[in-house]
Image (tube, rainbow, N blue to C red; front, side, top):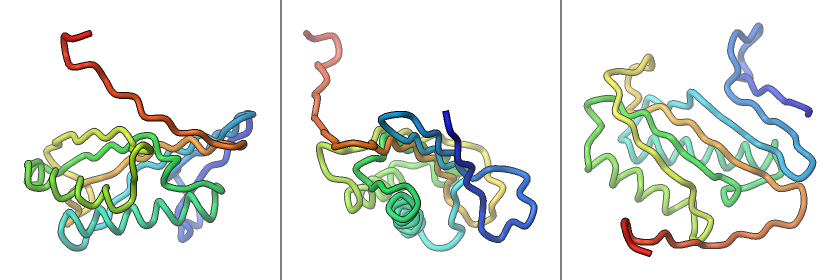
Length: 145
C-alpha cells in the first residue's frame, strides 16, 4: 500500500501530519485531522473549513465532497449546544447533497488548543479510482423490523 502524508505548507520541518492518504487498488482513503479556523461564528468556521476540504479533495486527491464519508466535530464546551449543532448542520447542507451525506458526530470537549476556534474537525473520505455509485439506505426505526 502506498501512503501520502499531508503537512502544512508553511512547515519547514513538520513534526505532525495534518492528514494521510492511503492508496488502495480501487480507492484512496483520505483522513484529515486537527482542522480549525479561529475566526467568526461556528457557521462561518464550518463554511471556511468545508470549503478548504472541498478544494483539497478536488486539487490534490481528484475527488469531491460526495466522497466525504465522515465528519467528526470536537466542540469547545461553550459551543456544545443545540444552537451550534443546528448552525453546523445548516452549513453542511450547503456542501453535501442526498444521498451522498457523510456520517457526522459532534463531541463536546472541555477546551481546544487553538484560541477562538469553536471546534476542531476531522474528515474522512473515500475517493474511488473508478466510476462511483452512491446509494441511499434508510435505517429501520429503532426496535422495528
